Amino acid sequence: MVLWGAQAAAVPCHQFLASWTWLSSPWILAWLADKILRRSSSAATVRAFMKVEVETQPGSVSTLQIELPPEEVSKEWDFIANSIARLAKIPGYRPGKAPRRVIEKRFRKQIQEELTKKLVSKSYHEAVEQQQLRVASLANIEDVELGEDKSMRFRATVVTAPEFELPEYKNISVQLPDTKVSEAEIDAALERLRDQAADFVVVPERELQMRDFAVIDFEGLIDGKPIAEIAPQASKNLHGGKKFWVHLAPDNFLPKFCEQIVGQKRGETRQITIVFPADFPVKELATKEANYAVTLQEIREKVLPARDDALANKLIPGKTLDDLRDIIQQDLEQEKEHGVERAKEAQIVKYLHEHISFELPPALMKNETRRVLAELVQRNRERGIPDEMLKDKEKDLIESAAALAAHRLKSNFILHRIAERENIETSRQDIDARIREEAARYNVAVEKMRQELQEHEGLNTLAEQILLGKTLDFLKANVSVEKTQEPAVVKEKL
Image 1 (spheres, rainbow, N blue to C red):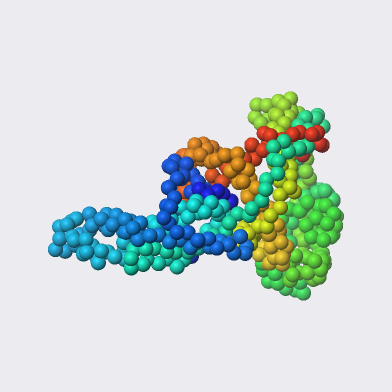
Image 2: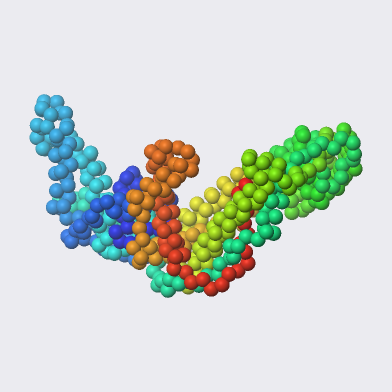
């Protein structure tokens, strides 16, 4: 997410005033909260008498020295002091009747804190607007000083968006996949559905053979020691297991495992040897020779259902085979239409990247790379990849995260610049509509969904998604289609 435009550069005070060294985390959210809030009210009038000096530094960093005159600070000081005086309970005085000097002496620290929070936030916003800066991230607010004469000064350090020229982005030439669904594609999808609906029938009286499914108990040892002790962090499937299913296919599961149990009979225990390759991802097992005791409990054979009305009724009760084929065709057509949209987006973004060049701010790259890396690690953990394997691939993960972060940042900078030029905005109505959609999707009340999003700063993320989506929709509506490519690859939804 990129902060764009002078009036979009302000960061709401509640996000950064908890600490003068506030760091945006994630940095991309600040723009949205400010931009959305400003839609419902007029922008603050820029103080002509506020002094602002801007110093540009390497790495797209700028420092703003901001100074407010005494009369402006005094006005706000008086307002805060009077507000406190109306409610303050001070011994010896009736509520609201304590002299001003008593109020200021007793509540001086509170007045200063409220004054600083309000004026720093407000004047920072206006300074950015006054200087017409495109702020991508607020790095910190520091050196806040309140003078004896009631003047105020502070320094704000910001990361600014890179400067670049937009190419002609209307009528971008794209090649789109064919959306026609063939009978062969319907047949292929139907075969996949048959495979998913297959039964696994117990075969009691024959030896195990390739393509069977073996249900086994097994345990692995290396030099007489359980693999679970040698590599405790490795997948439990490497240690051994009970009633474990193995599909017999060449080099499936472990190297030469399946080949060595071909011919095994139900109830038989067989000793097999596995040599782990040098590049095996679990270091403790690489190049080691393991002995597995494998006991065959069952042999199961995969049996596909007939291609008939019974299959259709099993998949979708009440439907015939012809009905099923029609449903498959509709799903494939819908998925191909989605494929067309994805192809448009991919080619639009590729065109923009190829025709626009600029340096990404190092501070943003660092933050975004860190965030993407966390996403990649979490995604791999969810896939069951142990931390040890992830650590071995640390360099590759960091490189992948950096590449993805750079692509995201560049895309967002470009799309936000186009949104700015075309006056594309995210409105409260857009956000409300999306919240209703999300609530319906997860079958929860709209207000509960809104509350969940607010608690996790999800509204900002939602608004960002909407803005980028609207900008891409604008670009997709203005493409020039050259010719069609090969049909899109689709997955049936059944």
